[in-house]
Image (cartoon, rainbow, N blue to C red; front, top):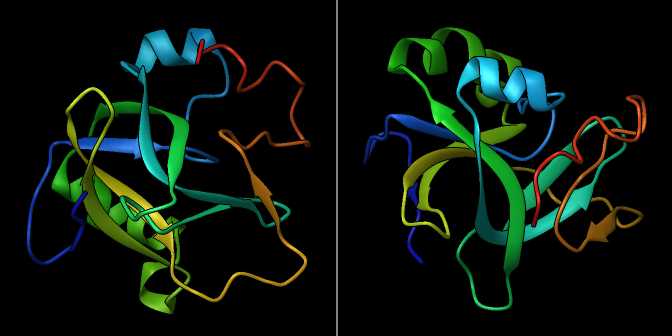
Length: 137
């Protein structure tokens, strides 16, 4: 599966697998999120997750949510939140399991040696256990 830098392609959808995603099913319905997956490797970096190797060999399906997004929201709100200009994350496009073309933020720094690789989903331990468990895999 291919992926490109933010200057090459466009999408009208965002794939979120961590702190950008909905906190519960009510928020998901209200804000137009749907469940989906992207191929990658996911690491628990403590207060947030890091997705790497999107679409690469050896990757697995990572659970997340998709919603419509505007270019303006990406540039003005989400890129700054994700630290794109600081090199923390990079925004790329990829294709989800259901075939949607989406923007996704991938971790742009080396993965810390003590980071735990996750099998499919990141759970924010600061939130109630059900906060990100509302999608069926």
